[in-house]
Each structure stands twice: as C-alpha cells, then as structure tokens.
Length: 522
Image 1 (tube, rainbow, N blue to C red):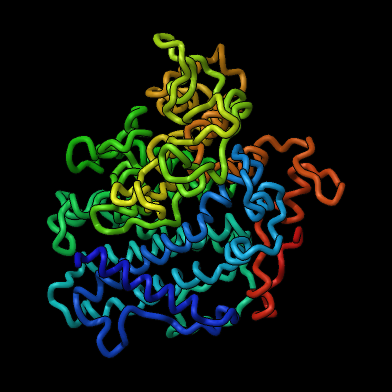
Image 2 (image 1 turned 90 degrees about the vertical axis):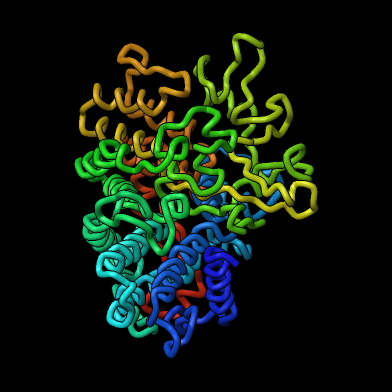
C-alpha cells in the first residue's frame, strides 16, 4: 500500500470513530487519533500521517453527502432537481426540513474534528522535532503553517454556512470545551491572522526548487505533491475570499493580486503547471484539468486521485448530474433546464455553450442533449475507468474550491467595487480570454453585473452560486424582493438581518449544548 492509501485508511478510521458516537454534544466526543500516544508523535512518519490526516478530515467534512454542491449550487441556483425530496427542500429554502442528509449537513461536528486535529498537530508536532533528527526545523515550520491554513479554512467555511460559530484555538488536550458561538467577525479575524502568519512560511511548490523548502518533501518530489498540498498561493486565495466575504475589497484586491503576480513561481513541469485553462483543459480531463486527478491548476481543492486509490462513489458532483450515456443511470438527480441554459449563456461566441458557426450545432462542452427535457451537465465527468460498466460508479474528480479563473474573477469583482472599472474589465477579459468572450466599455455598462454573470457561467457546478448571490446582493444593496417566508416578502437586507443567509444549526448540537443558540431566521 502506498502512503496515500495508508492515510486514507487512517482517516476512514477517524471518521468511523466519530460516526459511531451517539449524537451527543461535540464536547463529549473524545479525540480519535491515528495511533495511541504511546506510539505517536515520535517519528517523521508520525508527522506526515498526522498532518495529512487533517487534509483528509477537511476533505471529508466538505464533500460528505455532496454537501459542498448541495449548499453552494442549489439555494436559488441554476439546477433543477429531478425527484429527491431532500434536495428539493434545499431549493425551496426549507433548510430545517427533517431529512437525514439535511440533518447531517447542519451538524458542524465534522469541522470541529478538523479543527481539533489541526490544533493537536500545532501543539504536539514539536515533540517529534525534539526526538527525530530527520524532522528538520524548516520542515516542521512548513507543517505547522499548513495546519494553521487548514484550520483557518475550516473556520471560514463554517462562517459561510452558519455565521457565528464557537472559536476553539487549542485542542484542550483532546477534549472539546463547552462554549457558545463567537461572532463571525472575531472568527474570521482569527483565521486571517493565522493565514497571514502561515503565508510567510509556506512554499510555492513542494518537492522542488522552492527556496523556502528546497529538495524533496517527505521523500516526495513535485510530481508527488502538486495539487495535493496547499501552498502559499492557496493561503492568499483563502485570504482574498475571507476579505470579500467581509466586504473588505481593498484587501481582497491586494491578496488576489499577489496570486496573479506570482503564477510563474508555482511551476513544476509542462502542462501541469498553474495556468489559465483552455476549453479542453476545463472540460476534457486533460493534463491541465483541475478536476481530473491532482493538478496544480486546482489552487485550493481536494483530489480523489485514481492512481493513488482514492476513487469514491460519494462526494462528487457527477453523482448528482450525470446519467446515461456517461454512467449506468436513467436520469440525473439534478440538471440545468434548457430555458435556464439559454438564459444564462447569451453570448453567441461563448465556447462553453453557443451555436458553432461551422457545424450549425450547439457546442457540447458543458451540456449533453440540450434538446431533451433533462439536459445532462457534463462539464465535470471524471469517472473511474474500472467502474464505468458496473452498477456502482466510482468517481475521481477533485473538489475545486478555487482555480486561476475563479480568483481572477474575484479580483475583477474587488476592483469593480472599488471603482476601478477599467482595470476590472482587464481582469474580467483575462478570465474569459479562452472562452470566446471579450468585454468592452461599450458592451458592458454594468461591470459588476457582468462579472457575476461570468462567474455564473464559468463556475457552474463548482459550488459558488449561493455565495456569489450573497456577495452580489450585499454590493447592490437593493430593496427588491429577494425571498418570501410564510407569505412575507423580504429584501435581501431584511433576509440577511434575520439570519437567512446562513443554515440552521443542527438540533442535536443545540440540545447537547445549551450555550449554542439557533440562527434567528430558523
């Protein structure tokens, strides 16, 4: 078994341990570790396994039950649900409906498992440094920086979902303490501080010629680690998104600029380097695809690499969007209707979906069979070749949080909000250069609107739609009706003030901890 497989088994054991606890408060959940204290925190192999387990736990927390896409793409999104009642409840905004999937998604236990594991690594990995000569000071510093970055991302991710969440900054010797919710502002300030500290230590690449960490990393070269481990670029991407979520567009512009100015530093080998994607690179599982295996083009993401035995049947958008002839399934669980496709993809030159002038047919990069009642969204389709003919399909697609096009569009958004519209158009065109679209001052009277429309097209199926709508409505500050609740029409400002942006907190969490209060909207 290779090291990836061993770590996967370890993470599975950790998660199984968490699941096997009856649904008590998170403070009652004992820490579950890859090994006992008698044998752990002693060797270089312990450092690697414990750090990588944090990656594994965070990956599981985000994609379990396909939560990343159900939360990001269904609320006021572009997908129509075929027949799943729980998914239809999310589309209707009934986030407190009693369905097993929704009940699990509203419980933040899995994220606190990540936070505890990261805190434990930060606190105890120094023991290995004292005992293990091979565990160099620089290796240790880089590992600590990664743990801080992963913990900060978990907090940011939770704040987008629940708003105020408990802030725990230490492992408390493996015990969760009983605390109430901390203001989102304070939690994100902590995450920002952690990320800024980590960014000063993290390399641009692992196992290569990076001056921060030259040479091999845990006996692996660039081929081993690119697309698997988060880099300095990853830290600045997350910083940019935290700033944008807070409405701090000055910092969002600066952090995203750092990413775009340093693309050349995250270079390893040929077509797998960080770069803007052609249409085939985006949709055809090429060597540059951020979805097909571990790729440097996924600046922040979690790979499920087939080569390393990480195929799974759950935790991929394809499970929801594909059907025959791609997989043995009669119909997809969700799809983008033809009316929506025509409404969203309006540019006649758009290579993602438009009429090909040479053939007279619609381009099929994003969709298959658009004349049917349920067009198949096929932009992402990374299927394990060994399972394509079986009844149970396994997938290998990476969960991509950010890639170069995404962070470029975020920078365009920041510049537009700051009033730098000409520069915003330059960044917008930088993101669309390989999509057949050119924006000008003449055809783009509302630059902010154009940027979010482009994010809607480019990032479709990547878990962004709901969070983009939140930021857009914060920027526009419109008094128009955003949603109805119990017959009452609410503007976005009213909706957000009532806590409607966020998901309810699981009743299991509230019942177990009297200090936790429910979001007022729910």
